[in-house]
View 1 (cartoon, helix red, strand yellow):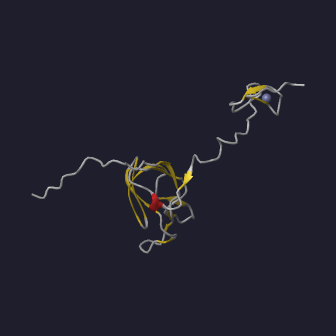
View 2: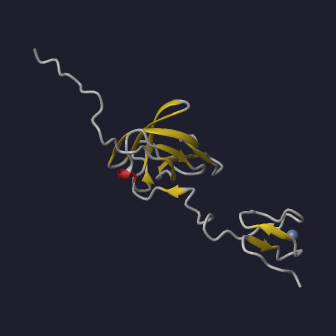
View 3: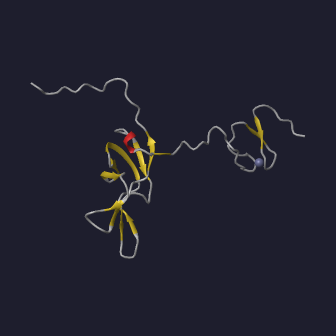
Length: 147
Ligand SMILES: [Zn+2]
C-alpha cells in the first residue's frame, strides 16, 4: 500500500507519486484535474461592449461580425480577427485600432445592410484580453488654451 503524505498526489492512471502542484504526472503525463486553477476565466467573452474602456485590449474571434455573401453562398468576413485596442465605444460598436489600423467593430443587431444586399451586418464576438485599470490619480493635467 502506498503511503500518502501531505503535499503529494497520486496519479490515477499509473500510481506514481507527484508533487501537489504538478499539472500532469511526471511518469505518464496523465493530466491532473486542477480545481482551483482551471476555471476558465482566462477568456472572458464580452457581453456588453459598452463596459469596455479606452485602452482595453480585446480580441475579435474569427467568423464573427459583418460579412459579405458571395454568389456561391460563401461568407467573407469583413473584420479581421485578432487583437485590437479599444479607442472608443458607442451604442452600435467599438472604435478600435488593430494591426491594420483603425476599425469599427460592429456590435449591433444582425441585419441586412440597407446599402448593399450582399452584406449582412452581424455583431462581432469579442474576448477581453486585458482591461486597463482605472487610474486613481489624475493623468497629467491638460491645460486648456483659453487665453
Ligand atoms: Zn501517471
